[in-house]
Length: 212
Image 1 (cartoon, one colour):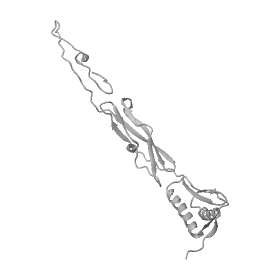
Image 2 (image 1 turned 90 degrees about the vertical axis):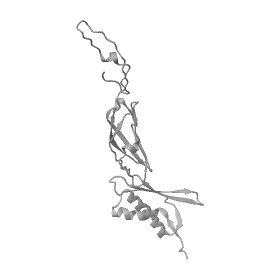
Image 3 (image 1 turned 180 degrees about the vertical axis):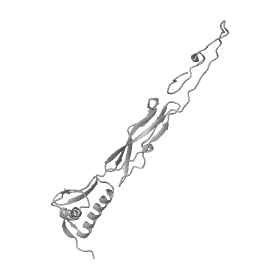
Image 4 (image 1 turned 60 degrees about the vertical axis):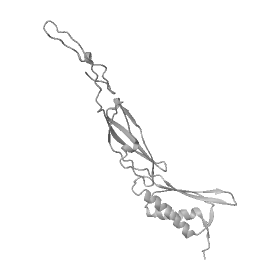
């Protein structure tokens, strides 16, 4: 048969479990208990284990981070006839943003674009990386050369971390040379000279022609 459930003072039980971690000094805790009047019918042994598991999971999630702490909060909702007791364990450990440098080529129109994944060199989070953003996505002729791009990585709890990548833009598309025929007359010495623009027939380049 099932053991009879105890009338458990919820916040007191949570505090007792957290005191074990605080005494051991193995984890940084931010404790905000707000269900001081809540008493629930529950198997205190099993409930204690549930709280241990929640804290242990959070502890493992921040194992490789020197910053951050585990915030544990409780609250009571409802009226005098019935209530709901909530316990929340928050992840406030930021992800680790890892950047990689990138070299890109302008196209025939003098444009190139990248995504956050292009400069992400393996960013991680103990839980899950939710979003990756960069502060520059489109590049043009004026960006030829090295450009600093900031990658920001955000996890499911809204924690974020940033790093920088060098995006080198290259213009390797040759101009389009257009020529026209020309007739010249020799002078009295049998010499004639011409200038490049006299045989140029509107040559083009997406980033401009430096010289003829």
